Image 1 (cartoon, rainbow, N blue to C red):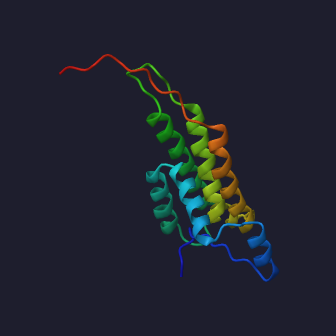
Image 2 (cartoon, one colour):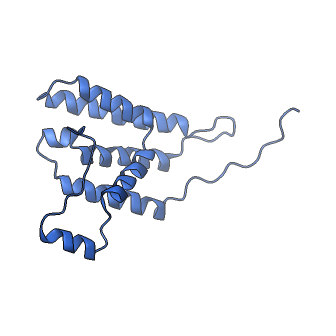
Image 3 (spheres, one colour):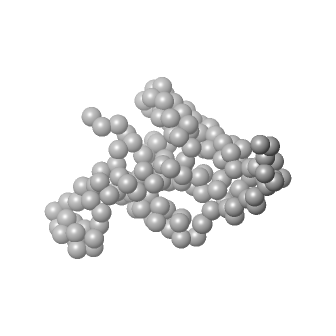
Length: 155
């Protein structure tokens, strides 16, 4: 049995012809979209979330929701801390923090997580969110400006 974090594209009947005509990506290509989404989220938080949900007993909706919120806070904290540069006097890169936080929520929705526990999960919507987010983010976010070169260090 595959883990809850595997998403598979399974066209039904006439959907296969429609998907092929529309140029829909095969399962391997969709997996690459999911991989791109995961790169926006700190790997420490992905591991933290997956281990945590393995510990939470089935049917514990509130615990799953709280754990998901703790992990979302971890994404924000890690990206806030990791995107600042005190030496250059630069604070956190808030766009990066927000993109990572939204990517985490999109990834969580694609898994089901607390959304499934509260009957708010629609699997195909999760797949479409993954595709849209990984497609559109590079169009509107080009990264933070590069830091100016500082004085050369000691030799």
